[in-house]
Length: 258
Image (tube, rainbow, N blue to C red; front, side, top):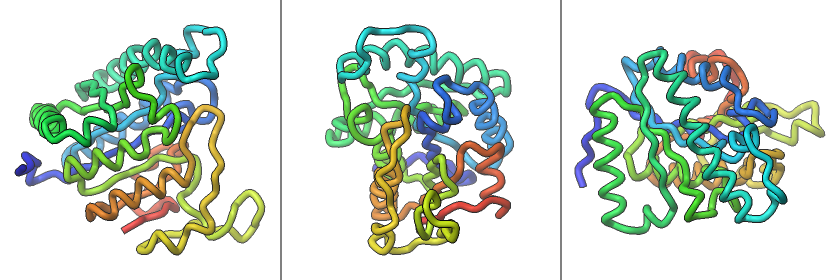
């Protein structure tokens, strides 16, 4: 299928995990979402954005206290409660800057079905043509892959592949991938450029955060999907203000996977 992609703008998939959206706390940070919105507004002349956002469960925990909260059913219930709250925050903040948003709930199964893939492409392209920013999350009510496995990392990569993105930006809680574990080595430095992902497997940790379900391993697996599709991936420290602008201007350390 021929993509209806803007000829003048580059297409960026921005993946925002729970840890980034909460700035490592237990609540969604309006300030971080404002930071993201300001950056997108600043870059809107040259780039169009598709956001893949986690955070529904974290949003729900600000409003409700379900018994248990440990099994998949509890987390699915929390996700269904939190998703409209999360989208309301995005809508309020982005709308103040003249950035209209639209919600897209997908599952991994949608990417395996030819008709669903075409429908996703048509819908997202139409939203972009009308200057809406699609905000994608997994439909946790009917699917559990994000809850169980990857904090939407794989979903972001599959979206980048399907929508022929120019760049996949993954906001993380590190300055990209390091030469060694920064928690144990004072000599650990950010790896600025990676071409062969197989060469960095030995320094990828399994650490996950309390709220996020991903980790660096799932981000590297997502970057591999993007790389196979000819799409560059950036791993950027999302806690910092202006993290995308600073990366683009060379004022921040981050990892490029080409």
